[in-house]
Image (tube, rainbow, N blue to C red; front, side, top):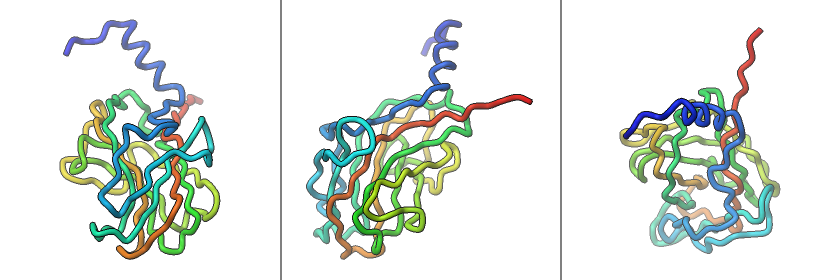
Length: 185
């Protein structure tokens, strides 16, 4: 890999000063559901930003999972992002009675990632909840984690209290990086 030129370095530095959309979720063709406990992957007009949001259902399928969600391949270099910047996404749940938490994962594959969780106590039923976590303060690590300069995998989902729990019309919208502005006094 060749070193970046000065103009390329400056452009990379400036790019981390502005909001960066990782996926607007206006389309779901790049996304794949987790097994047969997640069904009906589609877009919905229920959204916070953009044209659409991603929607799916959690059912009591043969995979016997306590979660529902979807994943996709990506290509991100988040290394220039300020360590205080936040990862943000919006989650709609019609009920949170059987929900443990919502999550978003970034990594290199389904076995090596960092996980950001938003607990059920922070979620609100019947509206989109704005979930946000500092980029470098993740809640769990799987496998060998990941390098923030080569993010190639992203998934999003909801963890339930029991494998038999079901919930229709789970919506996820607009995954983004919100930059932290540093000031000097």
